Structures are given as structure tokens and as C-alpha cells.
Amino acid sequence: MTVKEIDALVQPILSKKKYLHSLRMAECAQKLAKIHGASQKKAIKAALLHDVGYFVGRSKKDRDLSHAGISARYAKRIGIKNRSLLEAIEWHTVGKPGLDTLGKIIFLADGIESGRQFPLIDVIRQMATKDLDGAILMFIQVTRTYLHQQGKRMSTHTIQMRDEIVKQRKLQGLR
Ligand SMILES: [Fe+2]
Ligand SMILES: [Fe+2]
Image (cartoon, rainbow, N blue to C red; front, side, top):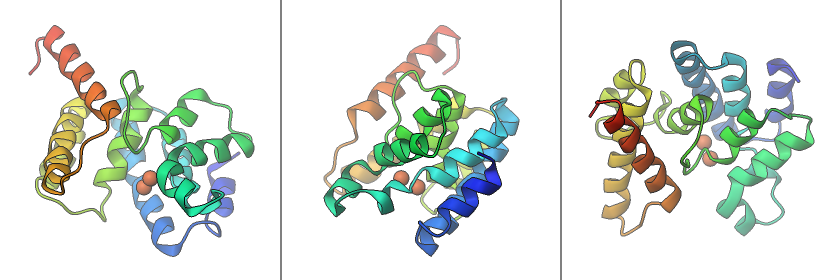
């Protein structure tokens, strides 16, 4: 399926608000894909599809809990077979260790697209254009602080992803 076809398919499914969020995310993800050598088309497709699970899930509880998994299943149903693209959609909310560049971009772009606003976001956006993993570490740190203030815990998947990146950077001699 082409980007155009996916766009035409998801627009009537998504709420106006989510559609606009997905478009802004697609723009951000495409930019990051270009910089970091991932497929720009896949980045746009993943962004357009990432939140459809909120609207095609069976029950509201289902949708709120696992919209990412539902979105990935939906993408499969419409004929998307690329594993990297499906994984990027499935793990966009919490991330996980072993995500490839596309998956990391989708995880980050969801949080820093131009409509988002939170402390240090401009620093993270700037860093994302040079050091994707560094930006992810900073994004996770800020998110963790925010969740902590709300009495919530971060997903173990996210923590494992962070730990993996930290370990890899130590091996590479980066901070
Ligand atoms: Fe989402
Ligand atoms: Fe989203």
C-alpha cells in the first residue's frame, strides 16, 4: 500500500485530533528517518497507522490498554507485511530493547512531534537530529519524572530499552 492509500484509509477512521497528531508525527518521523538512514516511506506509514487501534478495537478497555497492538494487527490486515514497520507500530507507546532505527524513530516522534509541549522538549528535538539514542535517553528520563510526579511507574519495556542503550553507549565510549 502506498502512503497516499494509507492516508485515505486512516483519515476517516481517526478522530480529527488524532489524525492531525499522526500527520505531525509523520512529518517528524520522516525528517528523523532521512537523517538517521531509515526508510522515510515506512516512517510515514507507521506514523499514519500507529494510533488507529484507538478506533478499531472491540471495546474501550481493549483500545485504551493495547491500542498499539491493535494498530499493528490492523496494519497486518490491510496487507502490510514488513516486520520492521509492524514492530514500530506495535511498540510505539513503550518501546522495547532491540528496536531498530525505525522503531526508535516512531517511539520518539510520537512524543516530540510539533504539537507536543513539555520541559526540555526543544533540547530533545535538537538532539534527535544528531544523536537519536541520546534523545531517546533524555525523553525517557523526562517521561519518567513526569510519571513519577503522577504516582505512576514507567513500563519495564521502556526501562529495558533505556538500559540497553546505556550499555551500548558505554561500550562505544559514549556517555
Ligand atoms: Fe499511541
Ligand atoms: Fe500517538
